[in-house]
Image (cartoon, rainbow, N blue to C red):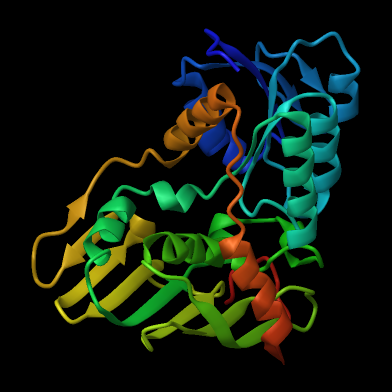
Length: 315
């Protein structure tokens, strides 16, 4: 596709992530114009709104692309509809509920000559590419991921995350896995997983993972969605040339005792720049490595029941 001055875009799912990240990033990107929204309950002032994607696609709207910000367990049908209607599609993370459905969408996009972009916003945190470059010529001896946050603070009232077909603690944890698979110079595979399920939920609230590497490095990840203290999103890597730490979800990088490197948060701005470039080049970007590790955790995981979850702060 030749570059056009403006790509009319529809944003589907007008929730917290759409308001916090997608809408500001679209507004700052001259390659896109927000031409329509789809939501059962919310809208954006000055933008035509539809209650369903079907209604939008059956309308006279001239949108060229769709960004799907709905929960993953309801996303497949919408993405299939949009691709079948000739629209380019951006998928929020995680890209779907299963590996197979995302692969089917990728196949359809390729068949129809359209762009499908499975986004991993954490890979675009300020220090992630610097960490990848530094690790490219290091011998990695060990890696430890610690991702602990309070679900009540970051996802209040979002009961869908505890239903089958969603990820529970892997909803934030997959951000860490997306960084891990981006910065490591070689692939790894999961060897064990311990998963804690609240007795009233169908998805885990905590997880501990172990990975194997070609070099024999010890890699572990600890995810906890009950953490009420200091919120932690850290990756610590030991190498034969010292320690490197990525903190604050990849926003800061520190090597040894040196100063921390950091930059401005432009994760979603980068996503929309990439989406525009992919559309222009008529290409897809669908990396399933982070979701594959989550699927493996559900396959290998030892399951333990724990206290029921309530969406109120513990007394």
